[in-house]
Image 1 (cartoon, one colour):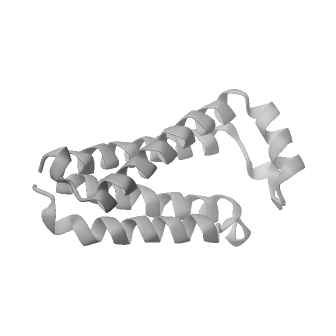
Image 2 (cartoon, helix red, strand yellow; image 1 turned 60 degrees about the horizontal axis):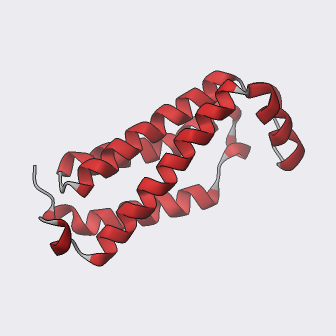
Image 3 (cartoon, rainbow, N blue to C red; image 1 turned 90 degrees about the horizontal axis):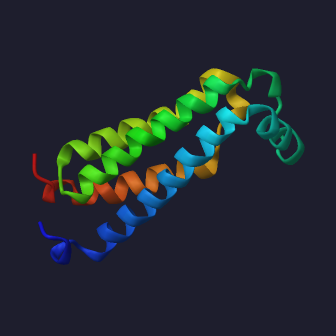
Length: 131
């Protein structure tokens, strides 16, 4: 399906996903590289209950998952069905990693809502993707 024929909603969600994933990749890898600075900012500006569990690897894992998410979105932009499954898997994993790493207080309802919303929108267009 050519770009001009792609539905506006799908094009919009793809653009938002690409933008969000790109920013997240940049920020998570920066947090891993400049860990001490970011950890201090996180402790100052959030209500994190277990800051001692934050290590650079945590941010690298998130950055890598956002890379997978972005690859999935790029595949969906090319109307490939495999992108949907890659994106969905990455998003679910992004919701689970904080829970496993830091406990139930690390669950983000806003992340869950947006992930679920975007996955639902992509699911609506799944039948238009090719293998």
